[in-house]
Amino acid sequence: MFWKSFNSVIAPLCILIPIIAGLIKFRSLPFNLKLIWYYLLVTALINTIATIIGRVYHINNLPLVHLFTLAEGLMLISFYKHTLDPDNQNRLYVLLQVAFLAICILNALFFQSIYLYSSYTRYAESIICILFALNYFAKIATLDLKPLKLPNFYLNTGIFLYFSGSFILFIFSNMITYKVSLSNFLIIWNIHACLVVFMYLLFSIGFIICKK
Image (cartoon, rainbow, N blue to C red; front, top):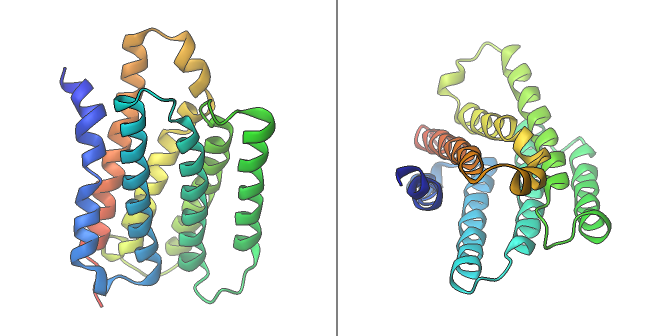
């Protein structure tokens, strides 16, 4: 009973923690951290709409998952663009955003209908975020800095833990939905919910320690 409530109620509501922390510190946040705060707002809005559509009206809400994956991917690429390349000298990020947009559209049209879980695009997004996160870790490792005092370190760690931990889930999500027992299915999604909560908590710490 606890895990069912954790997965369906507690974990989604935990997004309010970084949203409130970011709102309190909003004036102190640099642009890249504000992007993450806006990303959290978009996440909360889409998740709320998806929950209402799915649980109240009993309508397939997976089209919103396709939309969310697209928005999430574009916003996280933008976050890393302003984190890793603050001078905007590398066009790779813009090209990557265009490519990700094209992948999402092609996937919805030809591979995974908007009424199926968009595991292929989640898979692609996970790879992109994991590589960016590793790039960030490699970059700060070469500098004489104290990572625990860097807001970006906490945000990057949250993104890395979530997407690396969810990597297998995104790949096999459609197979998992139809071929595992209900109890194992719930265990898998409870693990996913824990990863989400850890990410939100790390985002909160990053916002809180941010200074002008």
